Length: 116
Length: 116
Image (cartoon, rainbow over all chains, first blue to last red; front, side):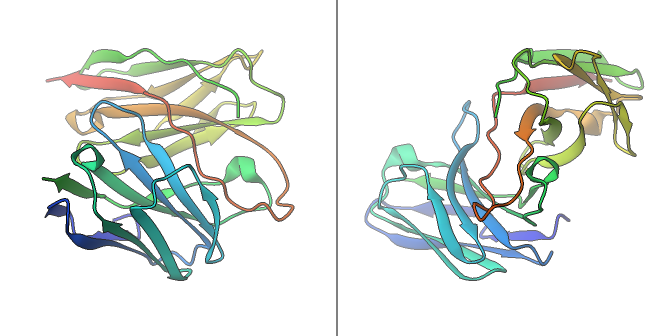
């Protein structure tokens, strides 16, 4: 148990569906992240939120829409996805320290998404 | 953050020590060396980090070369549960001047196989 909970664990959706992934952290952290992990590829950073404000968007298509209503919750809203968007979506959190070098990320177990 | 190079895969026997190498020849004097691992069907988890001196914790040891151009993660007695992908990541130290968190950049890591 890492203190970061993601739901659902598995999701199958059609290309015309709208769904949302949820992440909740119980660690009192002030930063949250979305990562994508496709088969046989390294993790790719998608979005970063600091104190509920989005500070990074790594050229992610607009069919992925993040939302961070408070520092404990993070959502990823999905609409009109493509089959190539099938992947493991991971949420992480961290406490942004003065010393960036020591920062540790805590990950959830991810949502395995299949787009048909 | 500077780049790291790791072998794609390694194999070891259960109950034997495992030495996972990482090369980082372009490391700067302010880069911390971090290790994470990702068990099957899980998100990555923090293992250990260090700057110059060797480090030990309950999970592993980190041996850092004197010139800091390489490091080795040591699992003292591998178990089947240590089978995972191990990532070596560099994090540059900088004071939080308002930029906040910016996430970790993961490479392909080393796939560690443990034989019973």
